[in-house]
Amino acid sequence: MSSLMLSVVSFIAGVKERLTSEKGATMVEYGIMVALIAVIVLAAVTPLGQAIATMFNNVTAKI
Image (cartoon, rainbow, N blue to C red):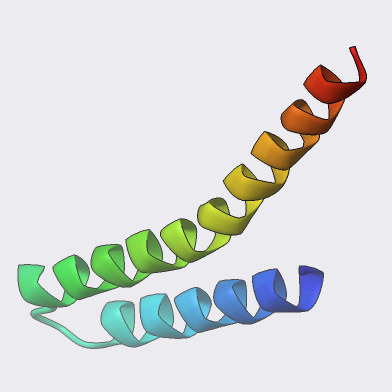
């Protein structure tokens, strides 16, 4: 998971560097970057939510 996070951070840093080095970065580029971050967050949260739900179900079953 940490290698995925490192890849995401380096990707965002590269995009940020590209946007700041060019004059006239548009809102469309920022919108695309925000959309990509949202997709990455959704992809990470979905399995995490399922794992937490399974953990709570196991605890409930043991009680």
